[in-house]
Image 1: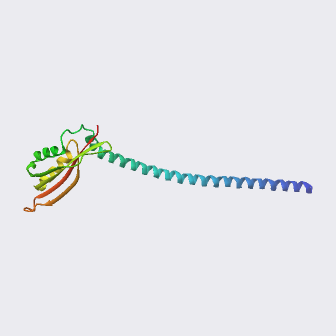
Image 2: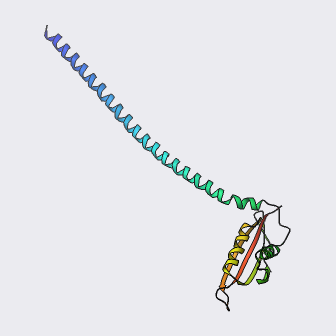
Image 3: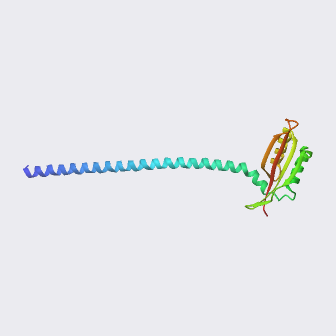
Length: 177
């Protein structure tokens, strides 16, 4: 072996080792870059999963609220009431035995908002027991058409503190034809 062959073998070995080290460095860089990209994507996926879970919770809340107002929507879609709000309240008062305690009926202005008719009445009742008041509010709530209590004032009766004087403004809401 001569000196030139030894140099050539050494330089070929060095070049081979340098190439091997370069390949290892390239593979290492590729793995590091891939790991970083994968890590970022995993974080993004976990954030999107959390966002999706919050949307599912919002959807569940929305459906729950929608179900809670479905009975009101059914009441709105019933045919229009051909009687005045005062007549409806008189009917309810007769059913629960408080018609004689209704001292005044004052119709309120009929309004039309966003496709809905609103007809109301302000009623004063004197000398109601707590049970009669609860029955009145229950009947208003359960009436076949949508009745809303717009204003409510209650004070104790002057002669008997166990009785109440009530001023209540009730509106019947129907869909405009």
